[in-house]
Length: 198
Image (cartoon, rainbow, N blue to C red; front, side):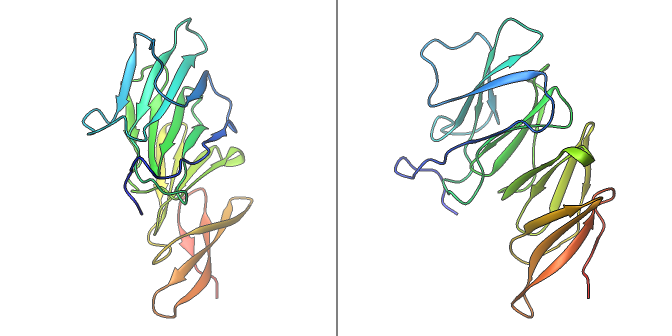
């Protein structure tokens, strides 16, 4: 994966509003010349935050004013996601900048967290389960209305592909280092426990 540079192609950001939400967000090409009074930078200690950062103008639906949110870029790679997703909790939004995923409370933008995977390779909202899934290189993590619900053990040695959801089961594909082959796995979306069929 490449770190950000000025010559890297910029991905087309995703805007996924699967879950009902109590905010509106506009993806900005660059920081506005006249910014709102409230500006939040995630993470605060990031160096060269402007380089490739994801800039959002966020309006909580119960307020008249917006705030500017700047999210540090993870990787300048078109293979990792960039964009905004609604979350099971209607006040929270998920912003992903080059595979670095941030969860922010639109009602209190100082309250936020960063998903542990560096990078997140896929974001999958599951409305029927009230979960938003994050795929890393080796495992999956799920967040619900009140935060992190579960994380699987290692599912793959390198890369995870989500194939489908059948009721409360997620079917996916992983890669086995010993056999150098792909294999199917099944994750219980209620618990994060998994089995490898066969």
